[in-house]
Image 1: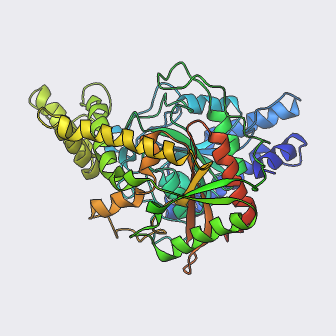
Image 2: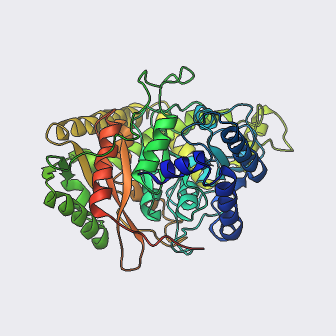
Image 3: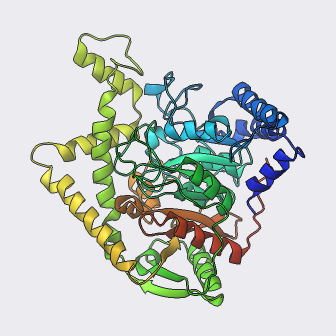
Length: 482
């Protein structure tokens, strides 16, 4: 059973209280977050008030929601009215949104406790959470290492026990890669399955909100809560919410595991390879079938992604002009200098790099050569996946080519940083569901992530396959104690 479903039973039977769990999480934050730095804003008073309201509802005998009393950390590019939404950027350092994101509204209706807003790479652009304008988040397993990115704050908060659940966003691997590096479970739903209304846009055709937790069942509970059609989001698909709770257990027998040969080539850490291969073999012994498949366009995924995403960012970030909201330069001569200075002062180097790259690729004379060609590659990537799924149920392989790496190791090498997402970006380009679960530890006791990718809108099948791996591997991770 899900740890959170067990907690809910104890909560309703009054063996425990929402206030107790919230205070325990806040205590961990107070003791550990000065070193981990997972949170940009901790909402202590609001969280305690929300927990008290849940306990009062139970005392009155009123029904409560599926996440009653559960503290949830929210990535700081998702709008919530009671806190700043900074996107890890100085340009939005003081911005407090006037509305809740749809996922936040659904958390409130589910009686969850929103405990704080977590750190991220600026505007979700990065793979290490070192690009935050405020501070670098550290990996709870080893504070000298990065937690991955861009949702590194959410992943670290869950790994360190600061919150049982967290929300992140995934544009090219920003949920799955930090989940792999922190030993957590991170799920990216099918594009359009979860509303993006209130998610500050980076790459609009790629962004998707998803959950972090310590088990597949807990992640499925949060995914179910936030899924479903939303008329406020034009890209939201008119499908009912995911029905995953109590529906995850399937027999491994006959499950067809597609193993892309391109995911096991040069650049893959030997320990990661051995752990992932061991996980696949474990399911084979239980009756699953290994199917060798090929995704030949994988080698072009990073190149296509770093055209499509910056082009969309160039458009989306044009609204930060120093006029409407966000940072505004104090001195300027005219409107043009106001915009230029506000952006120069507000945007960090990685965001600036991607805006320039996207603007160039969209400019006259280069659109066909870069952006349009990248869209053609994107279509071919989707066709690769379609062919592969003709012979298998899910695709499995490593989430990240390496375990967590030292802070600063790749900070001055953008290409090396971009390659951290070599196995994850294609999932977003094709709009598919993907999940990372822990499948072992390195000799240095660092987590290794296994990625499972499913067919479009087969989110339940993807979660079920992940649960099969989780159940058969039966890992007991020595969670970091800070």
